[in-house]
Picture 1 (cartoon, rainbow, N blue to C red):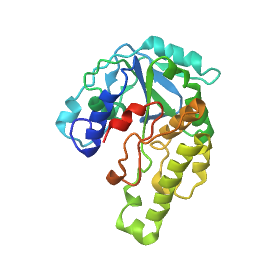
Picture 2: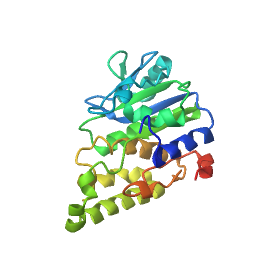
Picture 3: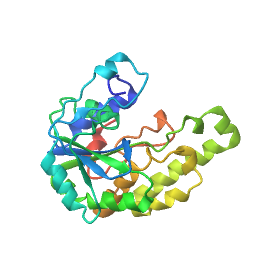
Picture 4: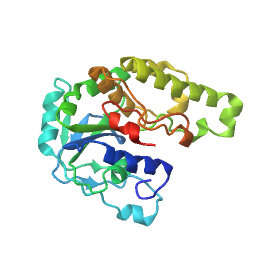
Length: 250
């Protein structure tokens, strides 16, 4: 999806121009899942081709946005006493970031920082860390939590329908939507929903949503569905705060 056009990338392409131009973008990516919380802090982050067996042109693709080392250092101070590391040379922008950005901001002329997801931490850690990032929004920084509610093809196949797992997964998606749109600070309850391990056999792709939940809880703003892409997967997977302009998107 980073370089091809389909129904979902069309939504991203339409979404970007509706936003006030951010001074910088922070992407919390499911694909930088490590044993620490960290942010990219280099002036020119490299394009990370973190996949296998893809078309050759995808390995040639580059998203050449600049970084913002000063913003990265500010984020370190902002979340103290939580430790946030500065990565100056090991990572960059992976496909959790540029798959969206290449369509929403194709000019790559806005500085981008990527933030990791720390493994083996309770849900509350991620929610609270997301809430600590909330002041960035007042400084014109767009924060994108890039993951997915359902990262398991087996949750939607014929066997899942036969076993009842599909219905459990669908209830998890519905419950997630209800919590985010009513009381996002309760998102840690989702860890105990029986549909969570069905939708997320590994936690990496779900956890970015908790940073969004923390941001939403800290802001007190109503969570919206900027576009309902439920027809493209198991339930809605796009949530937003502070982007009423997105209502123009079909």
